[in-house]
Image: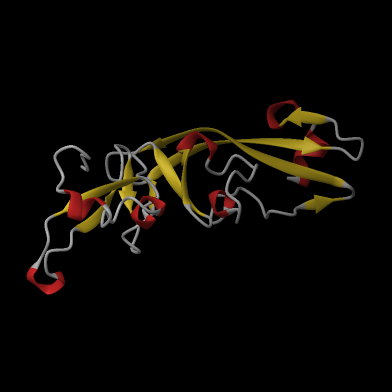
Length: 159
């Protein structure tokens, strides 16, 4: 921490955190001088609670908890596991919809009708595996939806 009153005047101009926040994305803290740099002060970048420092040691990213998954966009973004494999991409690169458990291929098309899969519940089991409750709907060309349990025998045969 820099304090203008307690810091010797000759070091005030040498505050490494004073220009561009020391190139830190969040917090820049002063560190003691080392023998390698002489009497000059050093700075170190730290992150606020809920964030961790990136490999560049200057920028911070969210620290995802056990109920979240990470999107690896330009910067890591955490999204709730509830949104994982829900049929809507919440990550810029769509990785929250990759490698999802599917009851049918992604682009399943039967005479203009499509099966739409939605994940209505996601939970992490004690052995670390993730279980998902998958709901299927048959989408007609006019974009009408029917739950899978309300399909006629003929419609269900398409499945």
